[in-house]
Image (cartoon, rainbow, N blue to C red; front, side, top):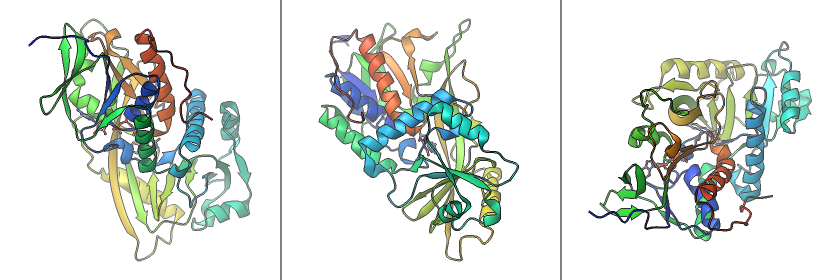
Length: 388
Ligand SMILES: Cc1cc2nc3c(=O)[nH]c(=O)nc-3n(C[C@H](O)[C@H](O)[C@H](O)COP(=O)(O)OP(=O)(O)OC[C@H]3O[C@@H](n4cnc5c(N)ncnc54)[C@H](O)[C@@H]3O)c2cc1C
């Protein structure tokens, strides 16, 4: 077979979740020919199976003010771009403490440093926002800008924006390998044996990066990679009908949080466990019990005789720079340029948002990296459709 290497100007993005679609918008806006290939329907994986928490960054502010700032910017851009993405029937998030020994001063100081606005709530306002929480468990609280958001609505809006900017989006198209010559990628092989040539391939494949494209991350004896992939698992509980409370976060628990969606309350914690790549989404009884215990404290009367409870677990893959600290603790948007890795391969990048909320930040970073790499023969001046 001949290799008309790099004969295409095309940028192929593999993966139609938040990372792939938002990057497609910004690259297509720059006038680049972009094709997104998604093995299933758009948002098939983590992007449609998450808790729907549009982070203000407040959760990260004490330990990681920069990450908190990024989240807040992304939240504002999400609201600007897709106001209908937030659940219309619920307010913004209430952060509250359950013990009078927990001061909120450290938190408000961190919010101030990260530029995240907040409002103190009186006892009456707290009880109004959390009408079904046991009053004995409510001590002090604040209102933050975090919202419950609808991932499906945001995905549709991003796909529409990418198409409007000229990107081609092909769902139900599985990429089963990279076309490579002399450690240089020149396209992808699609399952139907179609070969699609590209000058640059961007892998936005989330947790699949660890299985389908793991060779790109393989360690090489004697030289250390700057990045490692970490698979993280968390547990969630959905309760129907919902509690009637606004979204909330309990600051002095295991990070119990509540995100209401269309009549369903989804509870999670800040427990993200590192698991092996073979670990599936099976429930871990210890983790579900922890959520159960927290809910019993807050809702000792339960949720009524007709409530339906559904527990599930989900995994995500975070790319961590070697200088990053605990996995799950600082889910930064990350771009890995494989030409600079110990096992160098040219013309391929892997991209990870860290959290769905950070899609807008990641898209800007991808645009900058790609235009620099291509020594921008395109002049890109247009603002993103989510700019304020
Ligand atoms: C349980 C859970 C709860 C979460 N809750 C939140 C939350 O409340 N708020 C928040 O901000 N973040 C949350 N996150 C994180 C967030 O969901 C992810 O960071 C984000 O969705 C990742 O987006 P992505 O586009 O990188 O990956 P994905 O959404 O996983 O997209 C990857 C896409 O690539 C496709 N793909 C893979 N391999 C191929 C191939 N070979 N060919 C073609 N297509 C392929 C997949 O089908 C998939 O659609 C949560 C994550 C989990 C797991």
